[in-house]
Length: 364
Picture 1 (cartoon, rainbow, N blue to C red):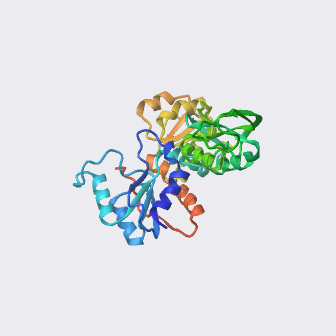
Picture 2: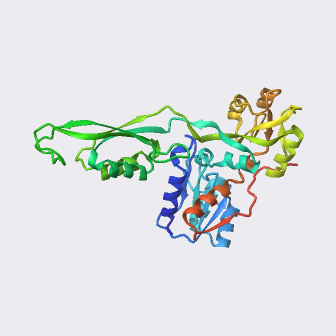
Picture 3: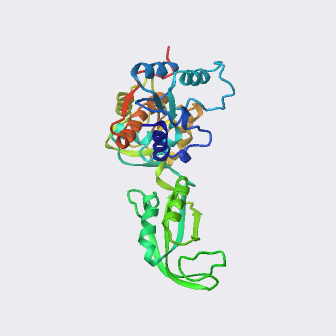
């Protein structure tokens, strides 16, 4: 398999358009035509991870955290990221990263946390916004099914657990071609009336080009009339953080012990104990401080995340139990998500989990 095949799949399965504005997910290092034998999955890319890839025969590293966040203006080795990139290029190791787009994915980092805690009725805590569009087009009746199916096949019409979602209504369309036209139906210079179907469906903004191309390829008209509208709807299947329910309520001490056993952090920081039963749990992989108010508003009894600031602990007192397990610990299962996605698409492609603990935080 070539690198470009893997990149094309990952860019689509974990849409780059989902990432936050500050992020830099996608192909970090590598020539698209490069042939691949095996991939190494890791949370972070370090020089030691590159050595591990070489030793295990992996020619591409797939990570959660990108190597390159800020522009690299030289490769002199003065920074850690420069040294990593330089070494990867020198050793011909490709690097691909899926960061905040993997967080926002339907079965992303936070959902994996919720599943590890055996939560039930899992929903998104802060749904994705400003990523949905509506496509409206007009299709001659005889070509309706062909065009509709092509649009669905390109990825439009997905709402939650349902696909092929659309709406149609019959009507009459009119048009008149000029002397340069080549009308599929009707004659040049004469107004033509045709029985048509108005068809509408939803799509993600990052799929717009692919779906429009599918529409144009399948539609019989020389000039295809269509409209695309941005939607304000939240997409409740995608977003940051998750909320779920424990099978049985537990006291706060028991809950913290469960969290410790699942994520195995070196140390847990937490807010004042509630001294009550814990039932509803909010989680967010990585730095989840910005979702504290969302967690409180959701009615959660506890919020498991990382990188919580001092004043956020103060804000949480007597409102919600905040449990800070550490950044690395909250995201370490992201490699399992990557594995499941890739092995389903490429079942014969060799995948390997890194055995290196890349957590940069140590405790005295």
